Length: 498
Image (cartoon, rainbow, N blue to C red; front, side):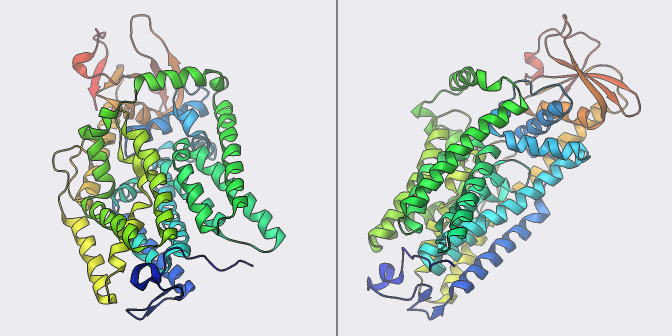
C-alpha cells in the first residue's frame, strides 16, 4: 500500500560515501535494525519519556495564560463573553474544547487535570511521529533524537500542564508524517489528503503560532516524500483551510471579533514592538538556553558541523529545512519583549535530532549507550541558569526535576492562597500582584453557581458578582497591578496579592 521510505542521510554519507548501503544498518558496529525495529524503538523510547514525566504532572494550572484560557472559556460558557481575550483569536478550537468539557458536566476544578493528561499524550504522539519522519530520512539514527527529545526542557516542562502548544504541535507533526507516506491506491491517496488537511486545521485552530514552522515543514515534507510537489500543494491547501477555520471559530466564540482583527494586530505590535536588541536581552537568551539545556545545545553545534562536513547534498538540504523550521519562530519571538520557552517549543522541536547525530557516529553500541546515558545524567544533574528566572514563572531554573517539583508546589501554593481568600469571605476581594492574580477569578468561578459582571462608578476595575453553591454572594475584582501601583480603593475591599 505504501512505498518504501527514502533515506537522506545514509551510512555512505557518514562513513565512506559509498553509493549503496542498507537503509537501517550500521556497517561498522553490526547494529542491524529493520524498519519495524526502528519504529518499535522510537515508540518505546517515547513512552518511557512520557512515563518519566508523570510524577511531575500538574493537576492545577501551570501559568497565568493557562488560567486565562480557563476563565475565558468559563465566561463564554456562562454568557459573559470573551472580554477581549487574545486567545479567542489564537486558540479558538482549544477554547471550544474546554467549553464542550464544561457543557458535558466536567467541573472547572477538574479541567486542568484533563488538559494536563491531553498534553502528556500529545507530547508522546509528537515524539513518535517526529521520530518516524526522521527514520524515513536518517534511518536508525532517529532513535537517538527521540531519546534526547524526552529530556529537552521545552518538551519536558511543556508537557506537565495544559496548554494548546503541545497538542497543536502533535497534530502538525502527525500531518507531516502522513504527508511523507506514499500511498499507491487512489482511495488511500484521498484519505491521506483529507487526513493532512484535518490535522493541520486542528493544529492551527488549537494554536495559531504553529504557522511559524510551516515554511520549514514544507521543505522537510518535500524532501521526505521524494520531492513530490503534489504533497506540498496539499499542505498549502490545508494551511489555507486552517486559517479560514481559525477566523470562523473565533467569530463563533465572540461575534464581531473578526471585524476588530486589524485593530487587535495594531495594538499587539505596538505593545510588543519588534527590535533586534530584544534578541540579545537576558530574558530571551535565558529562554533559548532553557529550551534545550546546555548539553543539547553543544551537541546541536557539533551535529551541524558534522552534517555539513560529512553528509551529501541531500543531508545538507535536510539541515537547511530544519534551519528554516527553527529560525523563523525563534526570530519572530526573539525580537519581541517577553519571550518564553513556550513560544520556542515548536521552533526548537527538531534540534534534538541534530544533537543526536554526533552520538550515532561512535563505533560501538556500548559507546553510543554510554554517551547517551552521560547526556541524560548531565541534563538532569547540572544546575544551569542559576541567575535568570525561568520564563512564565518566578521560580529559578536549576536542575530539571527540581524545577518541575518547584513548579508544581509553587502553583499549588498559589491556588490554595486564592481559594483561602474566598473561603467564608463576605466582604469584596481585590486580587492583585501581576498576571497570576487571575487565579482569584478562576477560584471564584470554581465555587460559583451563578456569575455576573458589574461596573461600579467609584471602582476602577471590572467586578464579578459570584453566588456560591451555598448561596453566599461575593464581589471580586482582578488587576495585574502591584499593591503599590493601585489607585485609591474603598476600605470595604480586601486586597489579596497572589
